Amino acid sequence: MYNYLLKQYKIMPMKKHIYHIPYLGFHTRAYTFGDIKNGTPLIILHGGPGGCVERYEVLEQLADQGIPLIFYDQLGAGYSRVPKGNEDLWTFETYLKELENVIRFFGLKKFSILGHSWGGMLALEWVCKYPHEGLEKLILFSTLPSTKIWNDEHLKMIESYPKEQVEAILNEKDKKPYDKKLFKQGMKRFYDEHVGKKNQRKYIPKTKHFPKTNKEIYNKMWGFSELFGNGTLADYDVTNLLYKVDVPTLILSGKYDESTPEMNRVMKEKIPHAKWVLLENSHHGGYNEEPDVVLELISKFIL
Image (cartoon, rainbow, N blue to C red; front, side, top):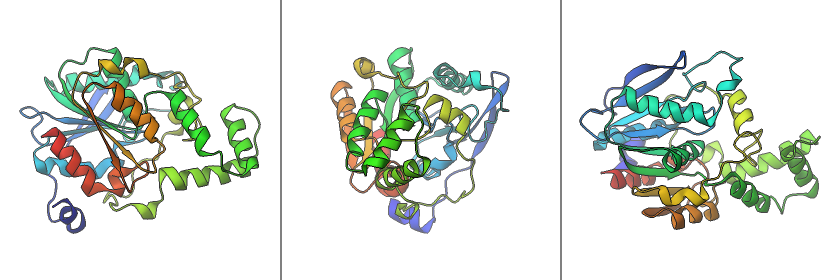
């Protein structure tokens, strides 16, 4: 069914409703599908930090299965624009409180959350350290429980790279002078092998032009590449708090993902009610590489 839907586009999602939610003197841009007042909506937390929710357009089709949806661009990202010069806003606290602000704005009594990559970090930080009344189910998609585990796993993944490239990558990680050409060569290989190439996508968003990642946010919070987190999120670690995730949890990751099997195994073992599915043909963007499989997994889990 989903293959037919994705390839033929015969079934279109129901009407989109757009909102601009006041927050910290700016606005969080959100949009919804379905009856979020009477159903149990699924809130989508996008990656980055500084990415945009428009990248997850394929998930809109879950609304046709009766799952109300709430998408929103996090502050400073996507269409939730903030002028430059507001670097002090780019903190975990800003985005944790923004999530709660979105929940309050829509008056949600019960809801589920899907967090991809950084969005999964945000979801885990919120569930593990804050009251999360109303949360019914959680989906952790290509994410991580600890920046240290992420960095350690990635060190193993580049061991076979040419020595000069590894040296440039490690110098960048440690914020030392590095050869930019060698660094780019190593990073291209890593991105091709673990983030994925455009020609590997089965679903191409109909909205082809969407905002680029806000590098100001990304660089400050995460760092300057996907390989290593060396920004303000370097100390992120909820590994020993995962027992607090007290709702049914679906963990998704790709076989070739930068979110490695070891990271996902840790989450599977430490979260009490967790199921982990490894997507056999995916890198970091499994929602676009195996969209039919992903949509079916999410639909069965939520409904």
